Amino acid sequence: MEADLLNIQPASPEPIYRQIIAQLQRLISSGQLPPGEPLPSVRDVAGVHGVNPVTVSRAYSLLEAEGFLDRRRGIGMVVATRTRRAISDSARLEQLDRPLKEVVRQARELDLADQLVLERLKTLLKDEK
Image (cartoon, rainbow, N blue to C red; front, top):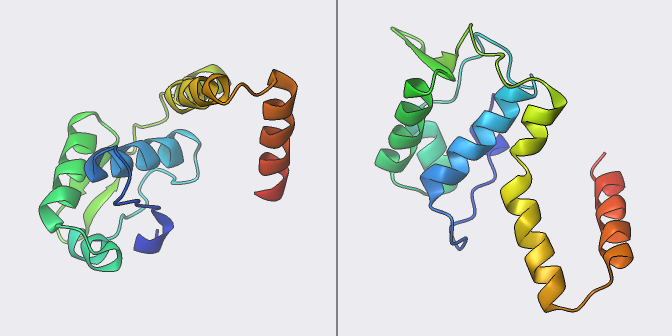
């Protein structure tokens, strides 16, 4: 995995370490980061994204504590070999609940019809393939 694969948004209200955690959990849960895959070093991620290395280290440590990552001497952090626990579609969909609820809230505030929002989502999904 390359450090620039992460999409860190410093202006987001979500703390950077949580952004890193959520993205890595999704990539691991979907199998896009397979067991044993090495992660970029804390220094690499911090340098590429211009964030504090302590922030990246905190995210990695929390993911290690949750069983998503393993620390390997001489290699650094790798995707845990026993991680494949959230692979089902329903478990992966649950990870989208919070951001989708935020989209629903904003759509209601903008008084947009459900069909318009669904059509936009379909378009965005198709464009990202």
